[in-house]
Image 1 (cartoon, rainbow, N blue to C red):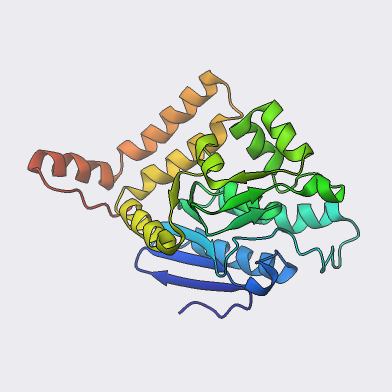
Image 2 (cartoon, helix red, strand yellow):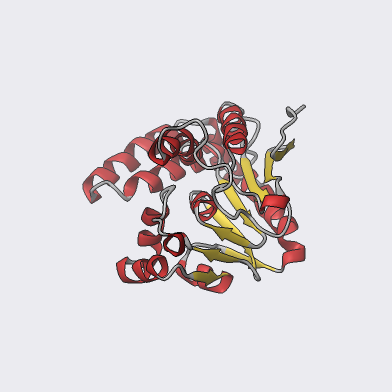
Length: 261
């Protein structure tokens, strides 16, 4: 049974874990308690091989309004300390989680909330959702890796314009830019996300784990180093029982059943 959380709705059903930010009265603003609870959940999932896919969404109309500005920096001396000691470990945990994470975005994702969604491996958005980068409207800069993500997706000039103008991207803009993978009517969002998670959960988990790390590392590696990293990952995968099962299933003309071994 999942532990009780004050800022999250967390459940595991079969091979799918569902994490919902659950403070709709604050538009799911990231508080210290929410960050702490998320780190605990992702740390638990890191060692739970029975879970193959993670859905990361929210209750209410918004995914997240960003950082809890009312709470401020809490016990930290500076906002830099807060970002590096509380946010960075959590974002890193997500990036290195063995399972793919699907962000499920029902409405606006703003500020560092958008950084969390973009840090996921896949993103499904409501077709009425949006992304807001309002940092410069209050004299701030993006954080949580949002600058890195936006530069990758938009290129320098478009990323600079969005950030400098405190701009908003519609769900359709996010889809076109590759920030979102799918757009779904709001009343079908979670059902579609869960269906996608179920499909992915039937695929070879070791291969998906290796693909996740390949793509995340390739952006900072040379072409030659990426080839070498692929070769190592392929060496891991080819010796698995899952690969032997896939070959046998192909020869026997039946669906493969992957065990994650």
